[in-house]
Length: 105
Image (cartoon, rainbow, N blue to C red):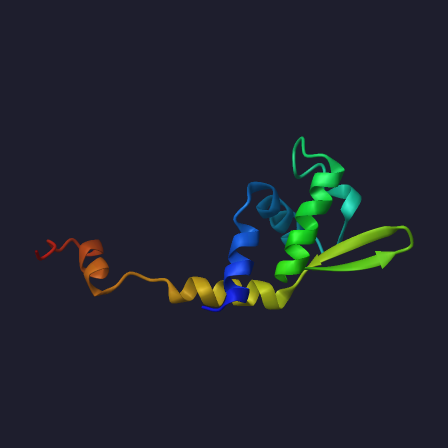
């Protein structure tokens, strides 16, 4: 795992940023001004900060449209997240425990 993987995981490990990622996964594009609803009582400047963190980590792409900025989820970031998650699986002993075997001392 390299530093970009750590940055990707760290950026997603915040409740507000995770809510933003979930919102983006259900929409093609979301205007920055529309994230306040999915983020509860978080102020717009705070949402902007979280979007900046996600952008710098590689999770989202920003596109200016007139005076608004729209955000989209980057498919390559989602793919890398899946690859990282796929690397995490129980070892041989963990699989044996899942099957009901008694652990060996």
